[in-house]
Image: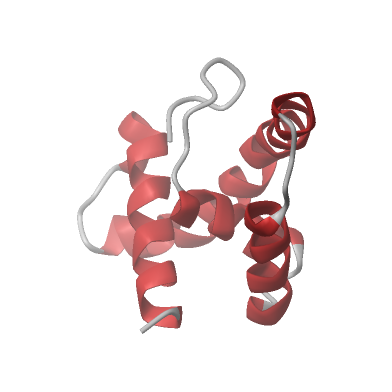
Length: 101
């Protein structure tokens, strides 16, 4: 993901991590909302509105995820604050991979 307030680029795993935080870490609810976003037969205007809302909300939730994982990073000698969005993408990728084996 690249700075969500500036660039609208994100992958499925990062969007899923945002939904996970949004739904207070309910995996079932995050999976269901992602499925609903992806299964719709949207026109391009509808799709634009849907993804605009998601990107507007992602920054805060992903910051929460970053804050929650910062102690683990520090204990491993990693400073995620210098590359916050790369760190968040790494965490999102790992969580998604573990939950979708």
